[in-house]
Image (cartoon, helix red, strand yellow):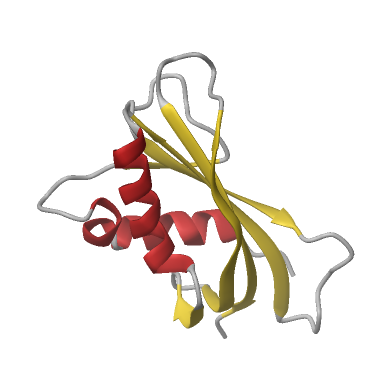
Amino acid sequence: MVLDIEKAVKEYLEDNMITVVGHGNATIEIHRRRFPDDSQAEGVVVYAELREGNGDTNGDVESVAIRVHIRTHNEESSFTLFQNVDKLLDNMVEKNLDDDTQLCLCHRNSGPNPYMGPGDGMHYETALYEATVRRIL
């Protein structure tokens, strides 16, 4: 079974934009795999990795690692944005991400950790979530 977990998490974060940005009617771009060259300065990137040594556990359940990157103008904004994303992903149990995918269990494995970006003056952080997902039947 191969679920598009990146699409599911992206849609889940977009559907919960008020929690992600934490105030008013603001929005932030959420991307898959990388920040596009023409993207807004501040944003979130989601990508999934298969966990090492784990394949399908029973045909309907899959273990994945979900990597989240945050890019903002400053460290304070980065902390707040990550805290808001973390509220939506860390320690989640049986949460439908979209019409096809259920997040059975998710917890943060590491992070948020700052890292050096491409020298654009932005503040970058990343975190890794271990998750078990299944197809909604």
